[in-house]
Length: 188
Image 1 (cartoon, rainbow, N blue to C red):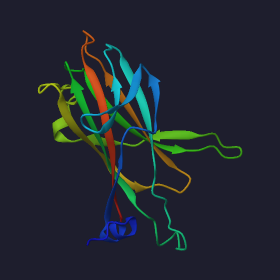
Image 2: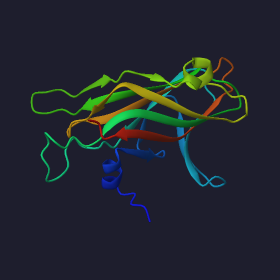
Image 3: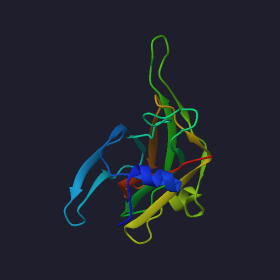
Image 4: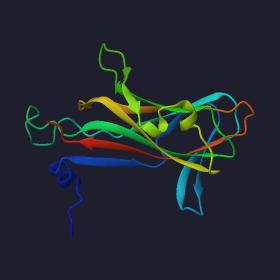
């Protein structure tokens, strides 16, 4: 039987973390978390709204060094891409965007800070109209945002992913967030 432990995955050079709805906070708009009894899945739903509404996901990070190892030689995993899995229902939306943020918590005499992580959308989602498309009613999306430069996170840093949903003019589109997948590699 294969070894799927985190250590084994790191030794193979890659890993991923799947996050269902749970560790999120609304920034604007009305969001409802519920359990879909038919699909046996959690979802975070943004109802009918013509405005831009946002939420942020706090994602667990792989530390720079592992317990009992030299931090200079064991850098852990580095983030390569962020995958947002969602559904657009009822009508097209104007846009759906993700913004990964590197968060540094406050320390004595130092304020908390977050900086945007630069990257690009996959070819199927590189246009706003593609990210908000609802042709199949519901339209299932696997949006991949690949970092321009994959990087390690320090032990005191965290990853936040800000998601913005721009509604349609008639306020007829519904957005359901299903999961966030973080893709890692072991780097050089």
